[in-house]
Amino acid sequence: MTMKSDMRFQILVSVAALAVSMTTGYAASQAISNTLASPESFSSIADTDARSAAMFTELGKVLTHPRCVNCHPAGDRPRQGDQSRLHQPPVERGADGHGTETMRCSICHQKANFEPGRVPGHPEWHIAPREMAWEGKTLPEICAQIKDSARNGGRKPEDLIHHIGEDTLVGWAWAPGYGRTPAPGTQKAAGALVEAWVKTGAICPAN
Amino acid sequence: MTTLALTINGRAHGPSEVRDDLTMNDFLREHLGMTGTKFGCGAAQCLSCAVIVDNPDGTSYAGPTCVVSAASFNGKAIRTVEGHAKNGEFSALQKAFIEHFAFQCGYCTAGFLNEAQVLLERLAKKPVARAELEKTIAEGLDGHLCRCTGYIKYHEAVRDVILADPKRYLV
Image 1 (tube, one colour):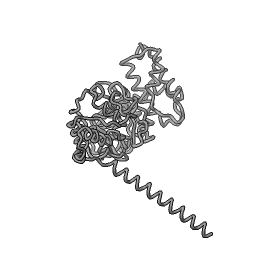
Image 2 (cartoon, one colour; image 1 turned 60 degrees about the horizontal axis):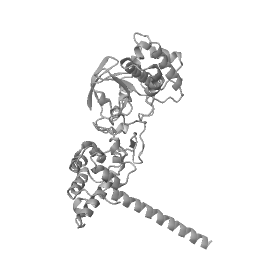
Image 3 (cartoon, chains in turn green, brown; image 1 turned 180 degrees about the vertical axis):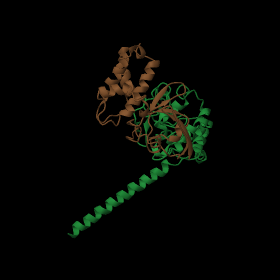
Image 4 (tube, one colour; image 1 turned 135 degrees about the vertical axis):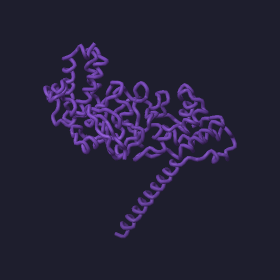
């Protein structure tokens, strides 16, 4: 009986330790994913190219976040929620990215978030063009795409500073409303990273 | 609070003060007592709550009322299921719905009726070939859910109305 009790106690302790470890790990990963390092924090990287790539990797926390990827879908249907499930009701991008003729985004998505309906909103609510799809892509692939004017809406790298740092639709990602995790950091911090990345040569990470 | 003034079924309502978090569905059903517009899923997925919104350019669309604020309808003109019959006479669509027994429980009927009316008005402006009709109706009514699975009956009812006036709706 004593041995059985000891064994039971040991198993209990192990399970508890594992649970604590998993919880701590989860909390740590949550804390990490919700912050964004400043450009200055990369100053210890002497090599400019390596620093530039490292800053883009940091920016990647934003670019690969569900708040961004959900509306940069690979197909014609946006995704939604932190789980990036397919949008319900089953809407499609339509000719201009604002929905089909009979199911425009603005029918449900109003000028601002409407919390009673749990519906996010912005005056220009729409999905990114097909050539700007980020879903399923690696960070280096997104980086190459974001620098390619044929796949970034004809923008120069400098234009991305404003687009990511100041565009109000992009800014929605940091104030997404009930039930949606905001993008890491702040829009200003993301803009600062883009600016520093561009000024250091806009180098893409290798992996 | 927000001031709301709009036109419903051709009649001016307001201005009145409404809460910013009041949904359009609650405004119709609870404030105005217009319970013909239903509340179904509450997530814009079944469209039983859809009403017709008339755009200033003469076009119209059917949109949900359950997930949108009443305040967002300020200055707009909408039509609800209560506005289809004129002088006590059912519309052609309503008659066709009855003839086909298109509804069982009837909960989705108002949404289907409004969507079908929008489809008729769109076809009157932009007729389609007969060969395209089945697809056009299916796509037009797509998104509306009927738990009694009355889809075919709704489809046939709408088709009957269109085929009864081919010069108007078909090329």
